[in-house]
Image (cartoon, rainbow, N blue to C red; front, side):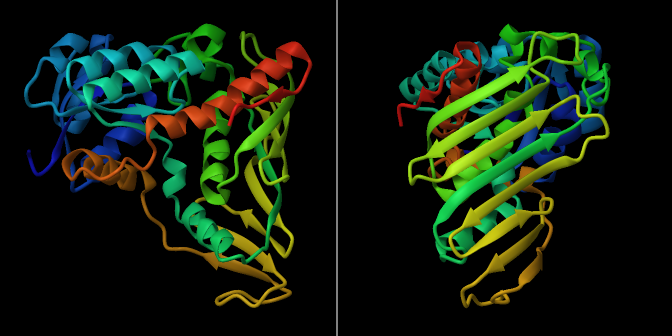
Length: 346
């Protein structure tokens, strides 16, 4: 086994170019061997930026002996077929969020990777932010008591150009506008990170979901505004408000309420914490501003993927974890369509 995990990048568009590619380059445990995109110019420009080989053929990547694993960064509806094809070729897989559009697709991915004895890890990188990791430590230490409520907000104002070119305009495509190809709008595209991160931090799982959504301002098939109410397995309640057409925006926001305090997230490396308890590093009865050491969560995700493949360590965010997060999203969409709460299986 090589000392570095040798990767093929599948999909060289926006996220791959501005985020994932940099994480691969900056990790001491990974190296990029080849980049693939069906659009030749996109593959060429990515390869030029990251000094790697390029191709427009997925088969060519999967046939290479010098590729140990692939990172799939393509439209959501392609995650399942490409993961299954990679697993059947004996390649380990890191797949972008969300794991898939449907639970059936996620199950097929998990099954294929299990049968092939390859690692499947979902790139839900906000679990690795300093704020998430410190908040998890505080929750586990009982700093705010029992968790009784969670709030999630993502109020942005995406330009019309986003739906065909993302934020960078690097690739012109219409998959974001399609319910079948994307799986949905603001909830599955953006709030997937928040849902997953707070699952990780609190250890709580949603048991019931009720939601309402609509498309108010955007010429797309997916929602541009959604409100979700959740009940968790410990009895806590949750509320999600997401919009891609909030004029003026206000950015993301998460808050955890406990019986003895609160945690407010102020970006990736800062927390506001209030506790009535005596906790080292916190002021009892006062708000404490925790400014944490910054780090690249994408690089840490790559390091952990390499550790799972090369060292045989358990994957931090295996396919099953990605599925649990997707289950909340699918339930919310089902509730929107039926007009009734949905009870989850977990």
